[in-house]
Length: 312
Image (tube, rainbow, N blue to C red; front, side, top):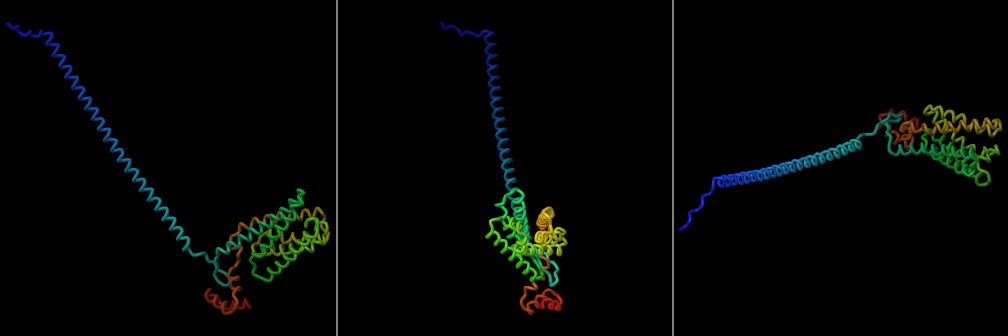
């Protein structure tokens, strides 16, 4: 006969039921955790995607803003340049008509000022050579200063052309005399003139031309240092030529002359360019060759034709 199946005991039934419930709860919890991780990953992924999209949009806006700013700056610079080019030059009223300062005028005026500065530096070099016993530097410094003075006499604006030509002629005579001393004597020019006062006749004309330049600057612009040089230069030269000035007096005159020259050359840079040009209409009018050209010029400027008499 077959045996009947054994029935589970109550304890075994309870244990099995509990175990099954625990496993089910654990499985459900694990499933929820997985879903939660997946949800967080999904949210993080979506957040990253949104952040990336926002970042790309910001970069695009920044690039657009940068391009717009660059375009605006370029347009402003082009507009400013166009305005500068199209802006008419300032006009000044002259005796024979209106005139303006050209680029060539500016170059000429600044070249004149630099030439005066070069002449002053040459004079300082001569003085330094004497003070520090550098005899070899005296002649080069002297001729550097003489060269600067020669250029200045060419570029200076003077209404009376014969006076300007006379100043240039005196400069040429003094330069030739200086070159003659340097070429024929073992001593430098300054030492030779110091030991032979009569040699002032050879170099003196150059200083006379400088005196005329100082008078022009003082009379036109009221510069006290220019008037001082106009007085000091002939006193210094004649005092040495005649022997009336003692050694101490000559030292004082030379030092005063050097100081005045430095102030004069330095203050030239404080003037406006138009002041160094003077009345440009005078030079324009006098450069015209025939009466017909002068008449046409005055008519264009709206001036009285009686000014033609000034050219006669």
